[in-house]
Image (cartoon, rainbow, N blue to C red; front, side, top):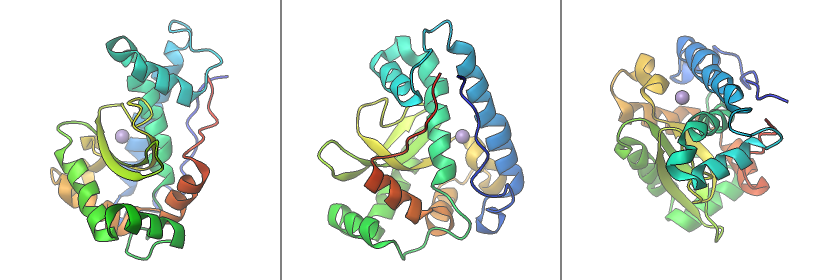
Length: 212
Ligand code: MN3
């Protein structure tokens, strides 16, 4: 098998009314994400990845530290973007969450506003390229975290990501220019697919189904 780029779970123009224009998605999904998939497939033979799942590759590359970086950069980014497309939807975001994820956020952060502030701050303070995350840690508690470049909470061993915001400049430059905080505010206000985040909470995270 080889890794592949699944179609977006919505039309490429579907998020335009929610602050992510068609050109952003065309480039981000069709060019950037495709490039990670192509590069990862190019590493399968030389890095001995054949038969391993994407999640296993990400975890092992993270444990390997500097030696694992060439694989982590591509495999992490493939996983990160698979999750990212899933956790957005047209007219998402807002303050009315499905019951189970809403209650869990209240329990672990003290309220939705506190969660949003922590998530936004994680994205704003990630210096350079990277990701802001909502994860389930080993004790079952929700936490906000951030990672640089292609890393993620699986590669760092921090937990299971159930929501991620891409803070690489390619994710927001056409829509928000240099204003990363505005992109993150919009992501939380208009894009997050909370039904999917709840599903990932209940199902133990995204199962990519992708194998080298
Ligand atoms: Mn990206």
